[in-house]
Structures are given as C-alpha cells and as structure tokens.
Length: 183
Ligand SMILES: [Fe+2]
Image (cartoon, rainbow, N blue to C red; front, side, top):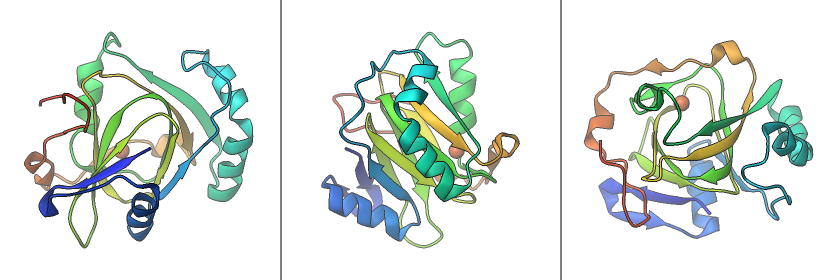
C-alpha cells in the first residue's frame, strides 16, 4: 500500500481512501492490483507481462498506451548512479508515467501547480499513473531495488524534461522504512 507524506504540513497519509483521494485531487490515478497474480517477483519479464495481461490491456484501452515492458533495477545494475541521477531531478514527460510495482520500493515526489509537494512511496502491488506534464522526481529507497511494469503511449516521448526549479533540493528522499537513501 502506498503512503503519502506532506513534509510542509508534517502529515502522513497511510489509509487507502485518503491516499487515493489525495492523489485523485492531483490528477494521479492510483490502484491496488489485488489479489496479485501467482507469479514470482523475479520471474522473467514475459511471464510477468503474461500474468498481468488483463490489467495491462485494460489500461491500454483506457489510456491509449501501446507498449508495456518490465524495468528491473538492482544495486548491481550497471550505470545505476547515472540512471538514478537522471530521474532524481525535478522533471516532466510528454507521456504519462505509468508504473505497476512488482518488487522493491521507491518514492515519487510530486510538485503540483497548487498546494504542497507530496512524497508518494510505492511498493509491490501499487499502480500509479502520473499524467504527462506533471512535475515530479523519483528516488529509490535504501535497498536500491525496484521492478515495475511500465506502459507507454509513445516510447520516444520518454525523456525527462528538467524544470531546474531547484525545488527538489529542499526534500530528502525519505522512505518510511527503517532507513533511507541519503543523497
Ligand atoms: Fe519521471
């Protein structure tokens, strides 16, 4: 289950209704895909995609997504630091950012046009859709591991466009677990 922290207000939202409602008000779709399918989190990508075919097809029909893949990030992933650095600065995309988390954890900071920045921590079973144009940034939690299904309207639109607002520098990528990944 995802959690939301609102650092400026010192608030944390952890119950499904408040999380879904708060995200909906920011235009972000959130779902729990439960019960999860009986597929191992470390199964090959094609098995994961096959297990979740029904949900993926439903999202494709709803959002005009044409392709789906599985992204796999581990501490030993070559070029991990460079990859993380690319997404830990405030940016937006010309495509929606759709992620279903299979394994691991991460934290999206969302910077809405009005209202405070939120830190949305996601874990296995969470589906989020961050609409195109939304200002956000992403960090892994301390385990530095995440596996997720991604959906794309146009894979060529998948490039971060940086805001260079500097707002991201005011927030630590704190996960609610026992430790966090310091920058
Ligand atoms: Fe992004």
